[in-house]
Amino acid sequence: MSAPGLYQAAAGPSSAPSAPPTYEETVAINNYFPTPPAPMPGPTTGLVTGPDGKGMNPPGYYTQPMPVPNTNPITVQTVYVQQPVSFFDRPVQMCCPSCNKMIVTQLSYNAGALTWLSCGSLCLLGCIAGCCFIPFCVDALQDVDHYCPNCKALLGTYKRL
Image (cartoon, rainbow, N blue to C red; front, side):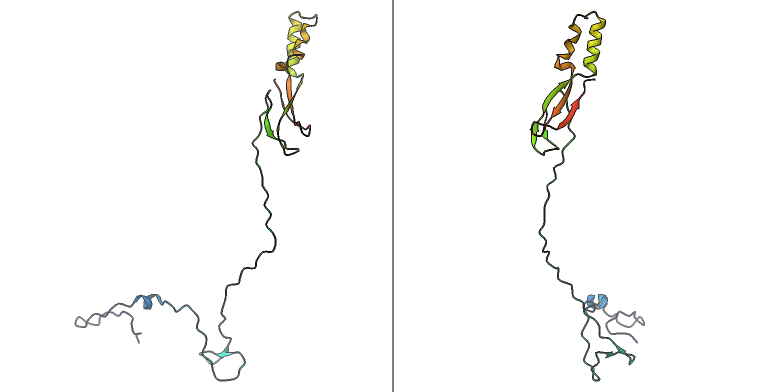
Protein backbone atom coordinates (compact mmCIF):
# COMPACT_ATOMS: atom_id res chain seq x y z
CA MET A 1 0.00 0.00 0.00
CA SER A 2 2.77 2.43 0.72
CA ALA A 3 6.12 2.56 -1.00
CA PRO A 4 9.19 2.20 1.19
CA GLY A 5 11.07 5.39 1.81
CA LEU A 6 8.08 7.72 1.55
CA TYR A 7 7.21 9.90 4.50
CA GLN A 8 4.11 8.82 6.39
CA ALA A 9 2.33 10.52 9.23
CA ALA A 10 2.46 8.82 12.57
CA ALA A 11 -0.56 6.61 13.29
CA GLY A 12 -0.62 7.47 16.95
CA PRO A 13 1.12 9.44 19.64
CA SER A 14 3.22 6.46 20.78
CA SER A 15 4.81 5.59 17.43
CA ALA A 16 8.29 6.98 16.67
CA PRO A 17 8.44 9.47 13.81
CA SER A 18 10.09 8.14 10.64
CA ALA A 19 12.79 10.01 8.70
CA PRO A 20 11.73 12.15 5.73
CA PRO A 21 12.56 10.87 2.22
CA THR A 22 15.99 11.48 0.78
CA TYR A 23 16.61 14.06 -1.92
CA GLU A 24 17.06 11.39 -4.60
CA GLU A 25 13.73 9.80 -3.65
CA THR A 26 11.91 13.14 -3.70
CA VAL A 27 13.29 14.42 -6.99
CA ALA A 28 13.74 10.99 -8.59
CA ILE A 29 17.23 11.73 -9.89
CA ASN A 30 18.53 9.44 -12.63
CA ASN A 31 15.03 8.26 -13.50
CA TYR A 32 14.79 10.38 -16.64
CA PHE A 33 17.44 8.47 -18.62
CA PRO A 34 15.93 5.71 -20.75
CA THR A 35 17.20 2.25 -20.05
CA PRO A 36 17.51 -0.27 -22.85
CA PRO A 37 14.76 -2.86 -22.77
CA ALA A 38 15.59 -6.31 -21.54
CA PRO A 39 15.70 -8.90 -24.33
CA MET A 40 12.44 -10.80 -24.55
CA PRO A 41 12.25 -14.34 -25.80
CA GLY A 42 10.10 -14.72 -28.83
CA PRO A 43 10.10 -13.93 -32.50
CA THR A 44 12.69 -11.43 -33.64
CA THR A 45 10.33 -9.01 -35.35
CA GLY A 46 11.71 -5.91 -33.64
CA LEU A 47 8.59 -5.56 -31.48
CA VAL A 48 8.69 -5.64 -27.70
CA THR A 49 5.80 -6.96 -25.69
CA GLY A 50 4.28 -4.28 -23.49
CA PRO A 51 2.78 -4.72 -20.01
CA ASP A 52 -0.62 -5.43 -21.51
CA GLY A 53 0.76 -8.22 -23.72
CA LYS A 54 0.49 -6.27 -26.97
CA GLY A 55 3.44 -5.59 -29.20
CA MET A 56 5.01 -2.15 -29.25
CA ASN A 57 8.07 -0.57 -30.82
CA PRO A 58 11.18 -0.30 -28.65
CA PRO A 59 11.79 3.16 -27.21
CA GLY A 60 13.82 5.37 -29.50
CA TYR A 61 17.09 6.85 -28.42
CA TYR A 62 17.82 10.39 -29.54
CA THR A 63 21.21 11.82 -30.21
CA GLN A 64 22.09 15.42 -30.92
CA PRO A 65 23.00 15.92 -34.58
CA MET A 66 26.54 17.07 -35.29
CA PRO A 67 26.82 20.52 -36.89
CA VAL A 68 27.72 20.44 -40.54
CA PRO A 69 30.80 22.51 -41.30
CA ASN A 70 30.11 25.45 -43.58
CA THR A 71 32.11 25.22 -46.78
CA ASN A 72 31.22 28.74 -47.95
CA PRO A 73 33.90 31.34 -47.13
CA ILE A 74 32.71 34.22 -45.03
CA THR A 75 32.81 37.56 -46.81
CA VAL A 76 33.10 40.68 -44.70
CA GLN A 77 31.91 43.98 -46.09
CA THR A 78 33.04 47.14 -44.36
CA VAL A 79 30.43 49.89 -44.33
CA TYR A 80 31.41 53.45 -43.54
CA VAL A 81 28.60 55.63 -42.29
CA GLN A 82 29.21 59.27 -43.11
CA GLN A 83 27.50 62.04 -41.22
CA PRO A 84 25.63 64.62 -43.30
CA VAL A 85 28.06 67.25 -44.52
CA SER A 86 27.26 70.94 -44.10
CA PHE A 87 28.70 73.00 -46.91
CA PHE A 88 29.77 76.60 -46.25
CA ASP A 89 32.11 79.01 -48.02
CA ARG A 90 35.25 77.03 -47.07
CA PRO A 91 36.62 73.77 -48.53
CA VAL A 92 35.43 70.61 -46.75
CA GLN A 93 37.39 67.39 -46.21
CA MET A 94 35.10 64.43 -46.86
CA CYS A 95 34.72 61.08 -48.61
CA CYS A 96 33.37 61.60 -52.12
CA PRO A 97 30.17 59.54 -52.58
CA SER A 98 30.89 59.25 -56.29
CA CYS A 99 34.49 57.94 -56.32
CA ASN A 100 34.79 56.89 -52.61
CA LYS A 101 38.07 58.77 -52.07
CA MET A 102 39.00 61.10 -49.22
CA ILE A 103 39.15 64.57 -50.77
CA VAL A 104 39.13 68.27 -49.98
CA THR A 105 36.43 69.95 -52.08
CA GLN A 106 37.19 72.49 -54.79
CA LEU A 107 35.12 75.66 -54.69
CA SER A 108 33.36 77.41 -57.54
CA TYR A 109 31.61 80.78 -57.07
CA ASN A 110 28.36 81.58 -58.92
CA ALA A 111 26.07 84.59 -58.83
CA GLY A 112 23.10 83.92 -56.57
CA ALA A 113 20.21 85.80 -55.03
CA LEU A 114 22.43 87.86 -52.70
CA THR A 115 24.60 88.97 -55.64
CA TRP A 116 21.61 90.18 -57.65
CA LEU A 117 20.01 91.93 -54.64
CA SER A 118 23.30 93.74 -53.96
CA CYS A 119 23.50 94.81 -57.61
CA GLY A 120 19.91 96.10 -57.52
CA SER A 121 20.52 97.96 -54.26
CA LEU A 122 23.56 99.72 -55.71
CA CYS A 123 21.53 100.72 -58.78
CA LEU A 124 18.87 102.29 -56.56
CA LEU A 125 21.54 104.21 -54.67
CA GLY A 126 22.77 105.78 -57.88
CA CYS A 127 25.74 103.59 -58.84
CA ILE A 128 24.59 103.22 -62.43
CA ALA A 129 27.95 103.89 -64.09
CA GLY A 130 29.19 100.31 -63.59
CA CYS A 131 29.75 100.29 -59.86
CA CYS A 132 26.59 98.23 -59.44
CA PHE A 133 28.43 95.23 -60.97
CA ILE A 134 30.98 95.07 -58.13
CA PRO A 135 28.99 92.32 -56.24
CA PHE A 136 29.69 89.97 -59.18
CA CYS A 137 33.42 90.29 -58.44
CA VAL A 138 33.17 89.75 -54.66
CA ASP A 139 33.24 86.04 -53.66
CA ALA A 140 31.69 86.81 -50.25
CA LEU A 141 28.43 87.77 -52.00
CA GLN A 142 28.18 84.74 -54.32
CA ASP A 143 26.92 81.19 -53.86
CA VAL A 144 29.52 78.42 -53.50
CA ASP A 145 29.50 75.06 -55.33
CA HIS A 146 31.64 72.22 -53.92
CA TYR A 147 33.20 69.82 -56.45
CA CYS A 148 35.30 66.67 -56.09
CA PRO A 149 38.83 67.34 -57.45
CA ASN A 150 39.16 63.67 -58.44
CA CYS A 151 35.95 62.91 -60.38
CA LYS A 152 34.62 66.49 -60.80
CA ALA A 153 31.22 65.53 -59.33
CA LEU A 154 29.08 68.26 -57.74
CA LEU A 155 28.90 67.44 -54.03
CA GLY A 156 26.87 70.32 -52.67
CA THR A 157 26.02 74.01 -52.84
CA TYR A 158 26.11 76.76 -50.23
CA LYS A 159 23.54 79.44 -50.94
CA ARG A 160 24.09 82.72 -49.15
CA LEU A 161 20.46 83.79 -49.25
